[in-house]
Image (cartoon, rainbow, N blue to C red; front, top):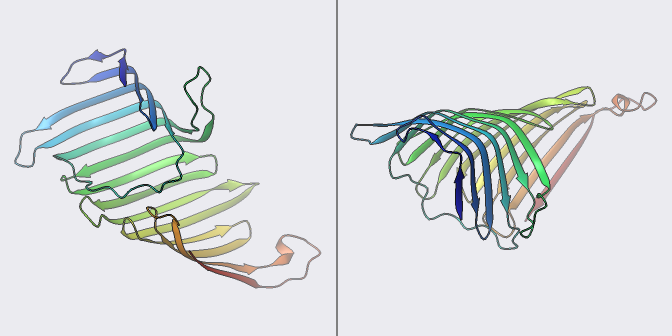
Length: 239
């Protein structure tokens, strides 16, 4: 069921909503303090333009399932879309509870999400993505073809500080959506490493293959009394 509370503004924009709730069999969504402005571009490509979408808080809960998610049949849009500014102050991914008055526990909270989105209906482009997590900040960009095999190209940088030590990670993902090649390089905490992953998110074993290398590791960086060395650790696995 979809419930909309506290609607204000004009149908042609801008519009505000105090709260929008959706309760489905396997999905629950609750959005609060929503502001949006939009217009329809009169052109051959029929472009829907949203200069701004702002959401104060967005809660998302999915029912757990042992069945792998299904690859979508189509990810194309019926018209071109342009979102100049998407802002979500706080996103909470929550656990699943049976209907009760008690709030669902938060599994992770992500703050200050911002991005731009542009699509001609088939080719989707996400740019200027920024967000904050308990582990640090992330920024990135991605392109996705909305027709099979849903080719994805994405880059991501994460950086932050834990226990007064700075870290940074750069990652790329490319390939069809159901068989992604992911490469990540990270440094920090007196360590450096890289990983090459074959990710199959729509299969029963989502990590098909992994090669992880960590090093060079100097034991003296972790314990003053330890001998100095340059050690490497390499791990390979196949699903």
